[in-house]
Length: 344
Image (tube, rainbow, N blue to C red):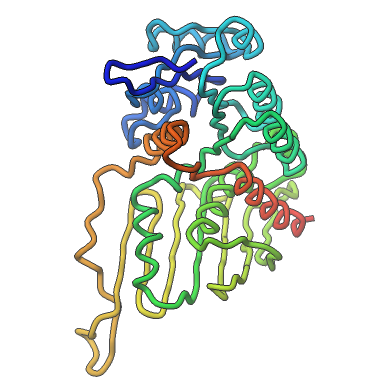
């Protein structure tokens, strides 16, 4: 149900399933770079008209309705699809355990594009079912692996050619959320799935390579047999040493990458991005050291969420391909499952 704007550019309609954290309320977090929710990102794009939302939580839905003037609200996605014309975009922003159900329902509604929150599903079997349904219906699905759209990570990908041959890539994620416990598989409330998908995805994207066959070390379990620490080691054609380390017993949150080449280094993560080049050392005669590259000027905003929505618009305009595909996200899930298999 595309509309026309005054300059004859199409206005794409959008509907949202899930008005909770990532769907709506993170848009009011004053410490985060905004937009930080699907609602705010959709509203912030002049080419999109947000026309409806559905949520089983009446309080969340009421708050959303007060904020998004003129949009319709529904107590279920089924009701929404029955009551409104099919929108161009359906965004699915519900909890992990409802991803498959809600994405399949969205596919059945046949929009021109679905934006699905990560992780795709609780496991790769469910994800494959989504992919099969999407392919059969001819409905493309974009996955919100947000760092693919962030300016700093895109700068890092471009900068890789400046640091020589890759020697090592290390990704770290520290938080207080459990890494894995079998009893949490039904709701997905564990960090390997919830956060690990970002770590695996961004490394795979930066290297343009798949990760597979991990050697998993440093597994630490608490007294309830819940995994709290691990490191997974991979080798790829471009980099012999790729390490992913996660902790679920830290009293802080940290997400970061350290990429070391033969002629430079890239360090980036939440709140920082540093680029280094080989230069004649100021400390040792006859040696070279790494020095911060002063020619790199970081943008004030990374645009991680707004750029994702713009990619959706460009895709519907047939100008760009989707930069975060369902197939790539499924490969991420398979890597996480390979790691998880080592915990048992």
